[in-house]
Amino acid sequence: MQQEDHYDLITVIKQLQESAKETVEERIKAEALFTSIGDGAMVTDEKGRVTKVNKTALELLGFSRKELMGKWFPGAVVALNSEGEPIEAMERPLTLVFLSGKTVSQKARYVKKDGGQLPVYITVSPIVLEDKPIGAIEVFRDISREDEIDRLKSEFISTASHQLRTPLSAINTYANMLSGGFQGELTKGQEKYLNIIIKASARMNELISTLLDISRIEAGKISHNPEKIDILALINGIITEQKRMAEIKKIKITVQHKKNLPVVISDPLLLGEIYSNLISNAIKYTPKKGRVDIELKVSQNELIFSVKDTGYGIPAALHNRIFTKFFRAENAARHETTGTGLGLYLAWQIAEVLGGRLWFKSRENVGSTFYFALPIEADST
Ligand code: ADP
Figure 1 (cartoon, protein in one colour):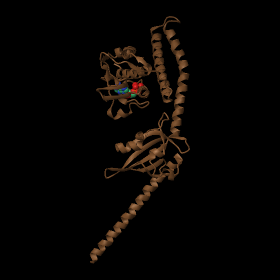
Figure 2: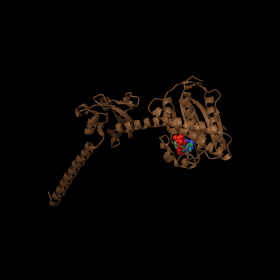
Figure 3: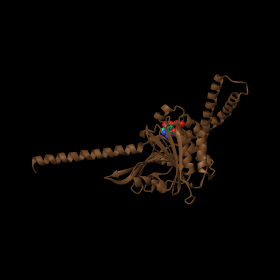
Figure 4: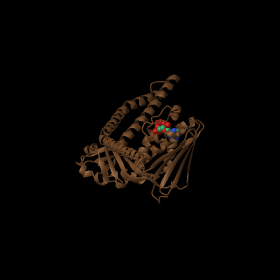
């Protein structure tokens, strides 16, 4: 062997030793990172069998390492949905990740070894090697404190709203009596001020109703009373209630539908709440002299309501936040200062209770169309 070759070999061996050391160091670091994650963490192979689980996961769930290692995770640890029913294996994030190849998050309750329940926020991501999924990593966070705070908040809102109702109805009654001349004739100025008081108390009453509806729905206490509904009468009633606002803004409202609408069986109050919210938003977020076009269509097994406006629209970047609680887009709030950001959140919750689908299309400065699809019996026409 020549001198040069010899040196080369030594260099290569040294490099190999270095890189082996680096790999070991990397592995130790990754291991330390995995063990020290403050949340429950677990790795599975491509079949969803646990190959690694950290101490926090074991402590949170109450299982020993031996009881989980090598087990198919959805089988080893049961997850419950918000109704307390077991989530099927096909709906578990771990399965969804293998099906979609994408990160999936889910709120659920894990059943611990002692039978207790642990509210968790789960995020599962695929581990991909050369384009092939070779497993998944799941991290789950204990959200019992957040859940409890949420519950207390809802309880507080519900109690406070009930307490506000009584004094508010006194304000409303007496303001109406004064305005009706029960205490003598009013000057123009007095009348004007009283009208402002009456309008403001009506708005507050509406807000309280929304808050109460939300706390009821969040507590799972909303009553769902399905009955036969005359859909057109329901929609026309809502339009009559909101006509005044549309007239002031010179907005034209149209309703289109096919001749024979199907018989719809649903809860008229809940369904009316969704329609009314969508129609009032369309009027509210459309500038003067615009249009609001309502349409009812029937697809195979759904009644599809849509309301299209020529309004301010919703900026694309905000589309995914529109149904969240208290959210208001700046472009709309600039024109229309009164609003709570609760209407669409409530509509979304009600849509779930009714088993329907709610969605929208919108372009800023062009307009929006909101849709609500309600399931109907296939042969109810
Ligand atoms: P609120 O109307 O009280 O603000 P909503 O929950 O009904 O609350 O609506 C949330 C936000 O969604 C509104 O503040 C507005 O930014 C946007 N939005 C809803 N409907 C429309 C619409 N038809 N056109 C434009 N923006 C809308």
